[in-house]
Image: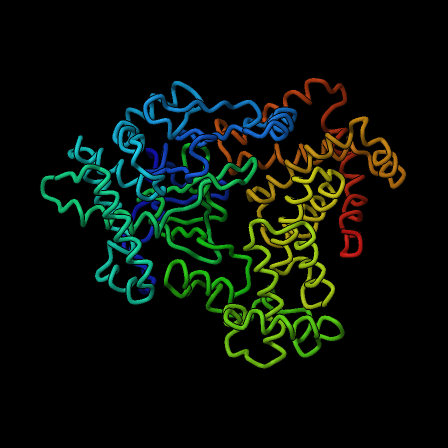
Length: 538
Protein backbone atom coordinates (compact mmCIF):
# COMPACT_ATOMS: atom_id res chain seq x y z
CA UNK A 1 0.00 0.00 0.00
CA UNK A 2 1.06 3.57 -0.60
CA UNK A 3 1.64 5.90 2.33
CA UNK A 4 -1.51 6.38 4.43
CA UNK A 5 -3.60 3.97 2.37
CA UNK A 6 -3.64 1.72 5.42
CA UNK A 7 -6.12 4.05 7.13
CA UNK A 8 -9.43 5.72 6.38
CA UNK A 9 -11.55 8.44 7.96
CA UNK A 10 -15.18 7.64 8.69
CA UNK A 11 -17.84 8.15 11.33
CA UNK A 12 -16.85 6.89 14.77
CA UNK A 13 -19.31 4.73 16.72
CA UNK A 14 -18.48 6.80 19.81
CA UNK A 15 -21.43 9.05 20.63
CA UNK A 16 -20.64 12.70 19.87
CA UNK A 17 -17.14 11.96 18.55
CA UNK A 18 -17.92 12.68 14.91
CA UNK A 19 -15.38 11.20 12.53
CA UNK A 20 -12.52 8.92 13.52
CA UNK A 21 -9.43 7.30 12.01
CA UNK A 22 -9.67 3.57 11.24
CA UNK A 23 -7.18 0.90 10.20
CA UNK A 24 -7.68 -0.78 6.83
CA UNK A 25 -4.96 -3.32 7.60
CA UNK A 26 -3.19 -4.70 10.66
CA UNK A 27 -0.35 -2.83 12.36
CA UNK A 28 2.20 -4.18 14.85
CA UNK A 29 3.64 -2.20 17.79
CA UNK A 30 6.10 0.35 16.46
CA UNK A 31 4.67 0.40 12.91
CA UNK A 32 4.05 3.72 11.21
CA UNK A 33 0.27 4.03 10.86
CA UNK A 34 0.09 7.50 9.26
CA UNK A 35 2.81 9.89 8.11
CA UNK A 36 2.70 13.40 6.63
CA UNK A 37 5.80 15.17 5.32
CA UNK A 38 4.72 18.25 7.31
CA UNK A 39 1.43 19.12 8.98
CA UNK A 40 -0.92 21.40 7.03
CA UNK A 41 -0.24 23.97 9.74
CA UNK A 42 3.09 23.99 11.57
CA UNK A 43 3.62 27.29 13.33
CA UNK A 44 6.22 28.39 15.84
CA UNK A 45 5.29 30.12 19.06
CA UNK A 46 6.12 33.83 18.94
CA UNK A 47 9.11 33.50 21.28
CA UNK A 48 10.61 30.71 19.13
CA UNK A 49 10.40 32.50 15.77
CA UNK A 50 14.01 33.71 15.73
CA UNK A 51 15.83 30.77 17.34
CA UNK A 52 14.03 27.90 15.57
CA UNK A 53 13.79 27.03 11.89
CA UNK A 54 10.31 27.93 10.66
CA UNK A 55 10.33 24.95 8.28
CA UNK A 56 11.94 21.95 10.01
CA UNK A 57 11.64 23.20 13.63
CA UNK A 58 15.31 22.60 14.45
CA UNK A 59 16.27 24.94 17.26
CA UNK A 60 19.59 26.70 17.56
CA UNK A 61 20.68 27.39 21.13
CA UNK A 62 21.37 31.10 21.66
CA UNK A 63 22.62 30.89 25.24
CA UNK A 64 26.43 30.40 25.05
CA UNK A 65 26.52 27.93 27.97
CA UNK A 66 23.66 25.84 26.59
CA UNK A 67 25.25 25.89 23.13
CA UNK A 68 28.61 24.60 24.38
CA UNK A 69 26.94 21.95 26.53
CA UNK A 70 24.70 20.77 23.67
CA UNK A 71 27.59 20.66 21.21
CA UNK A 72 29.66 18.57 23.65
CA UNK A 73 26.86 15.98 23.73
CA UNK A 74 26.44 15.94 19.96
CA UNK A 75 23.00 17.55 20.12
CA UNK A 76 21.96 19.49 16.99
CA UNK A 77 20.88 22.66 18.80
CA UNK A 78 24.52 23.10 19.81
CA UNK A 79 25.59 23.64 16.20
CA UNK A 80 22.45 24.86 14.43
CA UNK A 81 22.46 28.49 13.29
CA UNK A 82 19.19 30.25 12.51
CA UNK A 83 19.35 33.08 9.99
CA UNK A 84 16.47 35.52 9.66
CA UNK A 85 14.48 35.94 6.47
CA UNK A 86 15.87 39.08 4.82
CA UNK A 87 12.38 40.09 3.76
CA UNK A 88 10.41 40.13 7.02
CA UNK A 89 13.07 39.63 9.70
CA UNK A 90 10.35 37.87 11.72
CA UNK A 91 11.20 34.21 11.05
CA UNK A 92 14.43 32.29 10.47
CA UNK A 93 15.76 29.14 8.82
CA UNK A 94 18.56 26.70 9.50
CA UNK A 95 19.51 26.25 5.85
CA UNK A 96 18.86 27.41 2.30
CA UNK A 97 16.89 24.24 1.45
CA UNK A 98 14.53 24.85 4.38
CA UNK A 99 14.09 28.49 3.40
CA UNK A 100 13.40 27.50 -0.22
CA UNK A 101 10.81 24.87 0.76
CA UNK A 102 9.09 27.31 3.12
CA UNK A 103 8.96 30.05 0.52
CA UNK A 104 7.49 27.84 -2.19
CA UNK A 105 4.85 26.33 0.06
CA UNK A 106 3.76 29.13 2.36
CA UNK A 107 6.09 31.90 3.49
CA UNK A 108 5.55 33.96 0.33
CA UNK A 109 1.96 34.45 1.46
CA UNK A 110 2.91 35.93 4.83
CA UNK A 111 6.34 37.56 4.41
CA UNK A 112 5.18 41.09 3.59
CA UNK A 113 2.29 40.83 6.05
CA UNK A 114 4.26 39.92 9.16
CA UNK A 115 7.21 42.09 8.07
CA UNK A 116 5.16 45.29 8.01
CA UNK A 117 6.10 47.71 10.79
CA UNK A 118 2.51 48.09 11.97
CA UNK A 119 1.86 44.33 12.17
CA UNK A 120 2.00 43.04 15.76
CA UNK A 121 3.33 39.62 16.68
CA UNK A 122 0.62 37.27 15.40
CA UNK A 123 -0.23 34.08 17.30
CA UNK A 124 0.43 30.73 15.54
CA UNK A 125 -3.22 30.07 14.63
CA UNK A 126 -3.58 33.41 12.86
CA UNK A 127 -0.37 32.94 10.88
CA UNK A 128 -1.51 29.45 9.90
CA UNK A 129 -4.84 30.73 8.53
CA UNK A 130 -3.12 33.55 6.61
CA UNK A 131 -0.98 30.97 4.82
CA UNK A 132 -3.92 28.66 4.09
CA UNK A 133 -5.91 31.56 2.61
CA UNK A 134 -2.92 32.54 0.47
CA UNK A 135 -2.44 29.02 -0.84
CA UNK A 136 -6.15 28.54 -1.47
CA UNK A 137 -6.43 31.77 -3.46
CA UNK A 138 -3.31 30.97 -5.50
CA UNK A 139 -4.14 27.33 -6.23
CA UNK A 140 -7.79 26.51 -5.46
CA UNK A 141 -7.75 23.33 -7.54
CA UNK A 142 -5.12 21.59 -5.39
CA UNK A 143 -5.83 23.23 -2.05
CA UNK A 144 -9.64 23.10 -1.85
CA UNK A 145 -9.87 19.48 -0.69
CA UNK A 146 -7.34 19.94 2.12
CA UNK A 147 -9.23 23.02 3.29
CA UNK A 148 -12.53 21.13 3.22
CA UNK A 149 -10.90 18.34 5.21
CA UNK A 150 -9.61 20.86 7.75
CA UNK A 151 -13.06 22.41 8.08
CA UNK A 152 -14.72 19.02 8.60
CA UNK A 153 -13.17 18.64 12.06
CA UNK A 154 -14.55 19.73 15.42
CA UNK A 155 -15.89 22.27 16.22
CA UNK A 156 -16.59 24.04 12.89
CA UNK A 157 -17.27 20.78 11.06
CA UNK A 158 -19.98 19.49 13.39
CA UNK A 159 -23.62 20.64 13.30
CA UNK A 160 -23.94 23.50 15.78
CA UNK A 161 -20.37 22.76 16.89
CA UNK A 162 -19.42 26.41 17.27
CA UNK A 163 -22.73 27.20 19.00
CA UNK A 164 -22.12 24.37 21.47
CA UNK A 165 -18.60 25.65 22.04
CA UNK A 166 -19.99 29.12 22.76
CA UNK A 167 -22.57 27.73 25.16
CA UNK A 168 -19.83 26.11 27.23
CA UNK A 169 -17.12 28.74 26.82
CA UNK A 170 -18.42 32.03 25.43
CA UNK A 171 -15.10 33.86 25.79
CA UNK A 172 -13.23 31.14 23.93
CA UNK A 173 -15.62 31.32 20.98
CA UNK A 174 -15.40 35.11 20.92
CA UNK A 175 -11.59 34.90 20.90
CA UNK A 176 -11.79 32.51 17.94
CA UNK A 177 -14.06 34.90 16.06
CA UNK A 178 -11.78 37.87 16.68
CA UNK A 179 -8.65 35.94 15.70
CA UNK A 180 -10.37 34.51 12.62
CA UNK A 181 -11.36 38.00 11.53
CA UNK A 182 -7.80 39.22 12.22
CA UNK A 183 -6.38 36.48 9.96
CA UNK A 184 -8.76 37.45 7.15
CA UNK A 185 -7.92 41.14 7.66
CA UNK A 186 -4.14 40.68 7.64
CA UNK A 187 -4.41 38.33 4.65
CA UNK A 188 -5.72 41.29 2.68
CA UNK A 189 -9.44 40.47 2.91
CA UNK A 190 -9.22 37.96 0.05
CA UNK A 191 -12.20 37.02 -2.09
CA UNK A 192 -12.32 33.30 -2.87
CA UNK A 193 -14.68 31.92 -5.51
CA UNK A 194 -17.57 29.97 -4.07
CA UNK A 195 -16.62 30.60 -0.45
CA UNK A 196 -17.34 33.15 2.26
CA UNK A 197 -13.73 34.03 3.20
CA UNK A 198 -14.63 35.46 6.61
CA UNK A 199 -16.59 32.37 7.65
CA UNK A 200 -13.84 30.21 6.17
CA UNK A 201 -11.20 32.06 8.18
CA UNK A 202 -13.14 31.78 11.45
CA UNK A 203 -13.84 28.08 10.89
CA UNK A 204 -10.21 27.29 10.13
CA UNK A 205 -8.99 29.31 13.11
CA UNK A 206 -11.46 27.58 15.46
CA UNK A 207 -10.41 24.11 14.31
CA UNK A 208 -6.70 24.87 14.40
CA UNK A 209 -6.85 26.33 17.91
CA UNK A 210 -9.07 23.48 19.15
CA UNK A 211 -7.41 20.46 17.54
CA UNK A 212 -3.71 21.30 17.18
CA UNK A 213 -0.96 19.42 19.00
CA UNK A 214 2.15 20.87 20.64
CA UNK A 215 5.28 20.38 18.55
CA UNK A 216 8.56 19.82 20.39
CA UNK A 217 11.87 18.11 19.83
CA UNK A 218 12.35 14.84 21.73
CA UNK A 219 15.94 15.87 22.31
CA UNK A 220 15.07 18.64 24.76
CA UNK A 221 11.24 18.58 25.04
CA UNK A 222 11.02 22.37 24.69
CA UNK A 223 7.61 23.37 23.24
CA UNK A 224 8.29 24.97 19.86
CA UNK A 225 4.88 25.55 18.30
CA UNK A 226 1.67 23.91 17.16
CA UNK A 227 0.82 21.36 14.47
CA UNK A 228 -2.52 20.77 12.77
CA UNK A 229 -3.24 18.32 9.99
CA UNK A 230 -6.71 17.08 8.95
CA UNK A 231 -5.66 13.43 8.65
CA UNK A 232 -3.73 13.27 11.92
CA UNK A 233 -6.39 15.26 13.76
CA UNK A 234 -9.04 12.74 12.69
CA UNK A 235 -7.74 10.37 15.36
CA UNK A 236 -9.91 10.48 18.46
CA UNK A 237 -8.71 10.42 22.05
CA UNK A 238 -8.54 7.48 24.42
CA UNK A 239 -6.96 7.26 27.87
CA UNK A 240 -5.87 3.77 26.77
CA UNK A 241 -4.60 4.60 23.26
CA UNK A 242 -3.36 2.08 20.72
CA UNK A 243 -1.18 4.63 18.90
CA UNK A 244 0.87 7.75 19.48
CA UNK A 245 1.47 11.03 17.67
CA UNK A 246 5.17 11.72 17.08
CA UNK A 247 6.81 14.85 15.67
CA UNK A 248 9.96 14.14 13.68
CA UNK A 249 10.93 17.62 12.49
CA UNK A 250 9.31 18.44 10.14
CA UNK A 251 7.22 15.38 9.36
CA UNK A 252 4.68 14.03 11.80
CA UNK A 253 3.41 10.51 12.17
CA UNK A 254 1.22 8.20 14.18
CA UNK A 255 2.98 5.06 15.46
CA UNK A 256 1.25 1.97 16.82
CA UNK A 257 1.71 1.30 20.53
CA UNK A 258 -0.21 -1.97 20.45
CA UNK A 259 -1.39 -4.46 17.85
CA UNK A 260 -4.06 -2.78 15.71
CA UNK A 261 -6.30 -5.03 13.61
CA UNK A 262 -7.99 -4.11 10.35
CA UNK A 263 -11.22 -2.28 11.17
CA UNK A 264 -10.04 -1.03 14.56
CA UNK A 265 -10.39 2.65 15.37
CA UNK A 266 -7.04 4.32 15.95
CA UNK A 267 -6.79 6.29 19.18
CA UNK A 268 -4.13 8.71 20.40
CA UNK A 269 -3.94 10.72 23.62
CA UNK A 270 -4.93 14.37 23.97
CA UNK A 271 -3.90 14.64 27.64
CA UNK A 272 -1.54 12.88 30.03
CA UNK A 273 -3.18 9.47 30.33
CA UNK A 274 -1.39 8.45 33.55
CA UNK A 275 -3.13 11.21 35.52
CA UNK A 276 -5.96 10.23 37.89
CA UNK A 277 -9.45 9.77 36.43
CA UNK A 278 -10.78 13.06 37.83
CA UNK A 279 -7.82 15.07 36.53
CA UNK A 280 -8.04 13.57 33.03
CA UNK A 281 -11.77 14.21 32.80
CA UNK A 282 -11.46 17.79 34.05
CA UNK A 283 -8.71 18.58 31.54
CA UNK A 284 -10.64 17.03 28.64
CA UNK A 285 -13.80 18.94 29.55
CA UNK A 286 -11.89 22.20 29.86
CA UNK A 287 -9.81 21.96 26.69
CA UNK A 288 -11.89 19.72 24.42
CA UNK A 289 -15.39 20.04 25.90
CA UNK A 290 -16.19 16.33 26.12
CA UNK A 291 -16.44 13.63 28.75
CA UNK A 292 -14.25 10.66 27.87
CA UNK A 293 -16.03 7.32 27.59
CA UNK A 294 -13.05 5.17 26.67
CA UNK A 295 -12.64 1.67 28.12
CA UNK A 296 -10.39 3.02 30.84
CA UNK A 297 -12.68 5.87 31.85
CA UNK A 298 -15.75 3.63 31.91
CA UNK A 299 -14.14 1.98 34.95
CA UNK A 300 -14.06 5.37 36.65
CA UNK A 301 -11.71 5.78 39.59
CA UNK A 302 -11.67 2.05 40.33
CA UNK A 303 -8.40 1.23 38.56
CA UNK A 304 -5.34 0.51 40.69
CA UNK A 305 -3.64 3.70 39.46
CA UNK A 306 -6.50 5.71 41.02
CA UNK A 307 -6.40 3.93 44.36
CA UNK A 308 -4.41 5.72 47.05
CA UNK A 309 -2.20 3.50 49.21
CA UNK A 310 -4.01 4.83 52.29
CA UNK A 311 -7.54 5.99 53.04
CA UNK A 312 -7.98 9.79 53.09
CA UNK A 313 -9.12 9.42 56.72
CA UNK A 314 -5.66 8.04 57.59
CA UNK A 315 -3.83 11.26 56.74
CA UNK A 316 -2.18 12.27 59.99
CA UNK A 317 0.35 14.43 61.76
CA UNK A 318 1.79 17.54 60.20
CA UNK A 319 0.41 16.63 56.78
CA UNK A 320 -3.15 16.81 58.03
CA UNK A 321 -2.52 20.38 59.16
CA UNK A 322 -0.87 21.24 55.84
CA UNK A 323 -3.83 19.79 53.96
CA UNK A 324 -6.34 21.77 56.06
CA UNK A 325 -4.62 25.01 55.09
CA UNK A 326 -4.47 23.96 51.43
CA UNK A 327 -8.23 23.34 51.32
CA UNK A 328 -8.82 27.07 51.74
CA UNK A 329 -6.18 27.94 49.15
CA UNK A 330 -7.59 25.64 46.47
CA UNK A 331 -11.29 25.72 47.31
CA UNK A 332 -12.30 26.91 43.82
CA UNK A 333 -10.62 24.01 42.01
CA UNK A 334 -11.08 21.06 44.35
CA UNK A 335 -13.74 19.47 42.14
CA UNK A 336 -11.11 18.65 39.51
CA UNK A 337 -9.27 16.48 42.04
CA UNK A 338 -12.18 14.76 43.77
CA UNK A 339 -13.25 11.29 42.69
CA UNK A 340 -16.92 11.07 41.65
CA UNK A 341 -19.10 11.13 44.76
CA UNK A 342 -16.18 12.00 47.01
CA UNK A 343 -16.76 15.12 49.04
CA UNK A 344 -16.00 14.30 52.66
CA UNK A 345 -13.64 16.58 54.55
CA UNK A 346 -10.96 13.88 54.48
CA UNK A 347 -11.28 13.56 50.72
CA UNK A 348 -11.18 17.33 50.32
CA UNK A 349 -7.92 17.46 52.26
CA UNK A 350 -6.28 14.94 49.93
CA UNK A 351 -7.72 16.72 46.87
CA UNK A 352 -6.21 19.98 48.15
CA UNK A 353 -2.77 18.39 48.44
CA UNK A 354 -3.14 17.10 44.89
CA UNK A 355 -4.22 20.55 43.71
CA UNK A 356 -1.14 22.05 45.35
CA UNK A 357 1.16 19.55 43.60
CA UNK A 358 -0.43 20.11 40.19
CA UNK A 359 -0.24 23.84 40.83
CA UNK A 360 3.54 23.52 41.11
CA UNK A 361 3.56 21.67 37.78
CA UNK A 362 1.49 24.42 36.16
CA UNK A 363 3.95 27.03 37.40
CA UNK A 364 6.56 27.26 34.65
CA UNK A 365 9.12 29.00 36.84
CA UNK A 366 8.65 26.75 39.88
CA UNK A 367 11.94 26.59 41.76
CA UNK A 368 13.89 23.46 42.51
CA UNK A 369 12.93 23.73 46.19
CA UNK A 370 9.23 24.09 45.33
CA UNK A 371 9.31 20.95 43.21
CA UNK A 372 11.21 19.01 45.89
CA UNK A 373 8.76 20.25 48.50
CA UNK A 374 5.80 18.96 46.49
CA UNK A 375 7.41 15.52 46.12
CA UNK A 376 8.24 15.40 49.82
CA UNK A 377 4.65 16.34 50.68
CA UNK A 378 3.18 13.58 48.49
CA UNK A 379 5.56 10.80 49.48
CA UNK A 380 5.99 11.93 53.10
CA UNK A 381 2.24 11.91 53.67
CA UNK A 382 2.17 8.27 52.47
CA UNK A 383 -0.87 9.13 50.36
CA UNK A 384 1.01 8.61 47.08
CA UNK A 385 3.56 6.13 45.78
CA UNK A 386 6.43 7.12 43.52
CA UNK A 387 4.43 5.80 40.55
CA UNK A 388 1.20 7.68 41.43
CA UNK A 389 0.61 10.95 39.63
CA UNK A 390 1.45 13.73 40.18
CA UNK A 391 4.67 12.33 41.71
CA UNK A 392 6.15 11.06 38.38
CA UNK A 393 5.50 14.42 36.71
CA UNK A 394 7.12 16.18 39.65
CA UNK A 395 10.13 13.85 39.44
CA UNK A 396 10.56 14.67 35.77
CA UNK A 397 10.33 18.38 36.56
CA UNK A 398 12.94 17.92 39.31
CA UNK A 399 15.12 16.04 36.83
CA UNK A 400 14.91 19.04 34.47
CA UNK A 401 15.60 21.56 37.25
CA UNK A 402 18.67 19.64 38.42
CA UNK A 403 19.93 19.50 34.84
CA UNK A 404 19.41 23.24 34.35
CA UNK A 405 21.33 23.96 37.55
CA UNK A 406 24.29 21.80 36.51
CA UNK A 407 23.79 19.30 39.36
CA UNK A 408 24.95 16.33 37.28
CA UNK A 409 25.01 13.64 39.97
CA UNK A 410 21.59 14.57 41.36
CA UNK A 411 20.17 14.58 37.83
CA UNK A 412 21.72 11.17 37.20
CA UNK A 413 20.20 9.67 40.36
CA UNK A 414 16.73 10.96 39.55
CA UNK A 415 17.07 9.77 35.95
CA UNK A 416 18.00 6.28 37.13
CA UNK A 417 14.99 6.18 39.47
CA UNK A 418 12.75 7.23 36.59
CA UNK A 419 14.26 4.54 34.34
CA UNK A 420 13.97 1.63 36.76
CA UNK A 421 11.00 2.37 39.00
CA UNK A 422 8.72 5.05 37.62
CA UNK A 423 8.47 5.14 33.82
CA UNK A 424 8.07 1.35 33.30
CA UNK A 425 5.06 1.42 35.62
CA UNK A 426 3.46 4.19 33.56
CA UNK A 427 4.38 3.17 30.02
CA UNK A 428 4.60 -0.54 29.23
CA UNK A 429 6.38 -0.13 25.89
CA UNK A 430 10.15 0.16 26.12
CA UNK A 431 10.05 2.23 22.92
CA UNK A 432 7.69 4.80 24.45
CA UNK A 433 9.27 8.25 23.79
CA UNK A 434 9.39 9.28 27.44
CA UNK A 435 11.40 6.17 28.33
CA UNK A 436 13.76 6.54 25.36
CA UNK A 437 14.49 10.21 25.94
CA UNK A 438 15.05 9.72 29.68
CA UNK A 439 17.48 6.85 29.00
CA UNK A 440 19.33 8.91 26.40
CA UNK A 441 19.77 11.87 28.76
CA UNK A 442 20.95 9.53 31.55
CA UNK A 443 23.56 8.07 29.18
CA UNK A 444 24.92 11.54 28.41
CA UNK A 445 25.05 12.33 32.14
CA UNK A 446 27.01 9.14 32.79
CA UNK A 447 29.42 10.16 30.05
CA UNK A 448 30.00 13.45 31.89
CA UNK A 449 30.44 11.66 35.22
CA UNK A 450 33.18 9.55 33.63
CA UNK A 451 35.26 12.72 33.21
CA UNK A 452 38.10 13.91 35.46
CA UNK A 453 35.88 16.43 37.28
CA UNK A 454 33.91 13.64 38.94
CA UNK A 455 36.55 11.16 40.08
CA UNK A 456 35.20 11.01 43.65
CA UNK A 457 31.75 9.98 42.40
CA UNK A 458 33.36 7.48 40.04
CA UNK A 459 35.25 5.88 42.94
CA UNK A 460 32.24 5.95 45.29
CA UNK A 461 30.07 4.12 42.77
CA UNK A 462 32.84 1.64 42.04
CA UNK A 463 32.98 0.71 45.72
CA UNK A 464 29.32 -0.27 45.43
CA UNK A 465 30.02 -2.48 42.43
CA UNK A 466 28.89 0.09 39.86
CA UNK A 467 31.10 0.76 36.85
CA UNK A 468 30.14 4.02 35.12
CA UNK A 469 31.45 2.82 31.76
CA UNK A 470 29.27 -0.29 31.88
CA UNK A 471 26.33 1.87 32.94
CA UNK A 472 26.88 4.03 29.88
CA UNK A 473 26.84 1.02 27.59
CA UNK A 474 23.70 -0.30 29.26
CA UNK A 475 21.72 2.86 28.57
CA UNK A 476 23.20 3.29 25.10
CA UNK A 477 22.23 -0.27 24.16
CA UNK A 478 18.71 0.26 25.52
CA UNK A 479 18.14 3.41 23.47
CA UNK A 480 19.78 2.03 20.31
CA UNK A 481 17.70 -1.15 20.45
CA UNK A 482 14.29 0.45 20.99
CA UNK A 483 14.51 3.79 19.16
CA UNK A 484 13.72 2.36 15.67
CA UNK A 485 10.21 1.44 16.84
CA UNK A 486 9.36 5.10 17.46
CA UNK A 487 11.75 7.26 15.41
CA UNK A 488 12.61 6.78 11.74
CA UNK A 489 16.22 6.65 10.40
CA UNK A 490 16.19 10.24 9.12
CA UNK A 491 14.83 11.85 12.28
CA UNK A 492 17.10 14.07 14.39
CA UNK A 493 16.75 11.88 17.48
CA UNK A 494 17.50 8.66 15.61
CA UNK A 495 20.51 10.21 13.86
CA UNK A 496 22.02 11.30 17.18
CA UNK A 497 21.52 7.83 18.64
CA UNK A 498 22.86 5.96 15.61
CA UNK A 499 25.88 8.26 15.20
CA UNK A 500 26.79 8.00 18.88
CA UNK A 501 26.43 4.23 18.87
CA UNK A 502 28.60 3.89 15.74
CA UNK A 503 31.32 6.16 17.13
CA UNK A 504 31.45 4.42 20.50
CA UNK A 505 31.42 0.88 19.15
CA UNK A 506 34.10 1.71 16.58
CA UNK A 507 36.53 2.31 19.44
CA UNK A 508 35.66 -0.85 21.39
CA UNK A 509 37.60 -4.09 20.93
CA UNK A 510 35.45 -6.22 23.24
CA UNK A 511 32.53 -8.09 21.57
CA UNK A 512 29.18 -6.44 22.19
CA UNK A 513 27.75 -9.67 23.59
CA UNK A 514 30.45 -9.71 26.29
CA UNK A 515 29.69 -6.12 27.26
CA UNK A 516 25.97 -6.89 27.47
CA UNK A 517 26.66 -9.82 29.83
CA UNK A 518 28.63 -7.55 32.16
CA UNK A 519 25.89 -4.91 32.00
CA UNK A 520 23.26 -7.49 32.85
CA UNK A 521 25.27 -8.68 35.86
CA UNK A 522 25.61 -5.12 37.18
CA UNK A 523 22.04 -3.98 36.46
CA UNK A 524 20.50 -5.22 39.76
CA UNK A 525 22.98 -3.08 41.70
CA UNK A 526 21.94 -0.03 39.68
CA UNK A 527 18.28 -0.85 40.34
CA UNK A 528 19.14 -0.84 44.05
CA UNK A 529 20.65 2.63 43.70
CA UNK A 530 17.41 3.76 42.07
CA UNK A 531 15.34 2.28 44.89
CA UNK A 532 17.47 4.07 47.50
CA UNK A 533 16.62 7.50 46.10
CA UNK A 534 14.16 8.81 48.70
CA UNK A 535 12.67 12.08 49.90
CA UNK A 536 15.40 12.25 52.54
CA UNK A 537 18.21 12.38 49.97
CA UNK A 538 16.64 14.20 47.00
